[in-house]
Image (cartoon, rainbow, N blue to C red; front, side):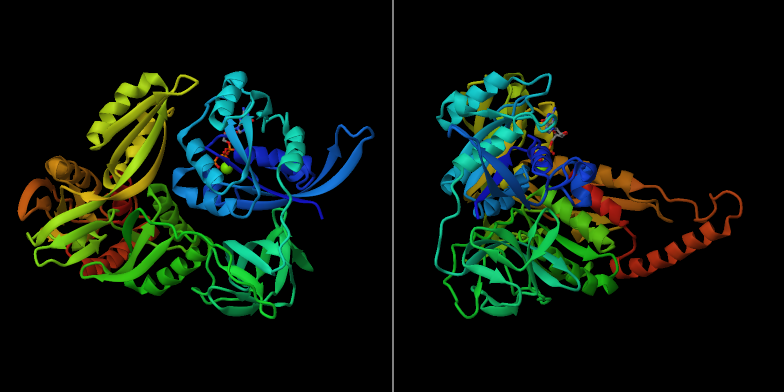
Length: 599
Ligand SMILES: Nc1nc2c(ncn2[C@@H]2O[C@H](COP(=O)(O)OP(=O)(O)OP(=O)(O)O)[C@@H](O)[C@H]2O)c(=O)[nH]1
Ligand SMILES: [Mg+2]
């Protein structure tokens, strides 16, 4: 079997999924009448937001026409493609996808040029020694600068300009040539004697259990075989094996070099993990090099609105983790909020996606606390502790030293926005380093900043000061001393742990004012005058009062719509139950989410 395994990598929105669409069409993998835009983006959230969140493997068959050989010769080749996400939060997906393939298509948008994520995904591909095929996308676009961007990409990779291909995912131009080039340049899988496959992803179904997605490096996996997870040292029967095109297509076996899936039937979480090696229990092989566990950069606690939902939340997180190995969590309990989970995320978008999935796919009403980065605290008595919950951050003078994570960031922007970006960097406590002009005239800025400041909406603000033109990449560097303090919010004179946050000491007064103002606007009126206060280091530093509402909650309803009235009273009853649990004031869950989202 002739096989080529490759992945498409690029900055966000540079046209990866759209190019994949044309490949699927051209190879006849998906019929034209079943085609929809970015067909590999299967999740509702991906479709709504127009971004890829999860990598997607797909198998295609291509009839390669051998050239320069006198008479035409047609060679059937199996192409296994893995589409990857471009957003910085999902770079862990990219790194996993790349261990399953021999070659990559590095795509650069002809209307944008090289961006921050272009550099970071290229870095990963180079580290793994993958064959890189440079391609300029969107060559049909009216604002495309094909020649310029080709030479920019050639310079970046140190290759001849003529080797950079051009494609349009819209018109399909250049796509057949690209497929031929993949056959020519991407090496076929190497032969190994061991029976082994690397698990790069998971799926889960209620009745079939865990489905592993793997790259077979050696031997074959046959339906009915007893297989083994090497690291977990757990055996299972292959209930079904098959390939993805892009839906599951069962077959008798998966062989060396292929990418496909195995249905394990395992329903217990925690056995299988991404990066584990699958082998045959009768002919076990050693473990393949797996993946570095991802480092969560931001943490938030998630509580069910009603404590009755705690078991459902636990199960939902277990299931989500099976399809998203970068999610981490542990159970915790906080006095007022009850029991919940401390969750680690790869960034703000990742957090938002997980919360949204918990709400939609599992129908949960949740309270989400203000996200925070990790702080390393040295106490007066010499003990050192890692704290990733504002509620546990000491504000009683027992901390001798606080350290926090810093990140190196790279920004690529057109010159016109450098001024605005410099101001933004200053506001976010960044130390600006080298700047250089790129071949196409854009500026590459290096800076270092606390991760806390990066997570404080920096990405969105960067997009807004640059009208969407600047791009950002970052990597964590290490812990440094931090000048931060805890800010508590009191509603009706009771602290609300979910609103507590750790802020820069120099911004604490400003943040306090902003937060009480926002809460005054967001919190519903109560039957009494509502006090909203911000407290830090034992002092109230900002305060607002929200006036009371009229007594009869149903009074404003028109006419005598009895069902609405009933509903409202029901709601009030439910609210009362929660009030007992949480304190005097019932805070609707969308207020928690709004405060989290808008900082
Ligand atoms: N004119 C033109 N537009 C394109 C082309 N390819 C993609 N687009 C548009 O560019 C946008 C992004 O396309 P996607 O294919 O979703 O980009 P992506 O790289 O998969 O994005 P992420 O997965 O979120 O990183 C969409 O609005 C597409 O319609 C192209 O060849 N020509
Ligand atoms: Mg995509």
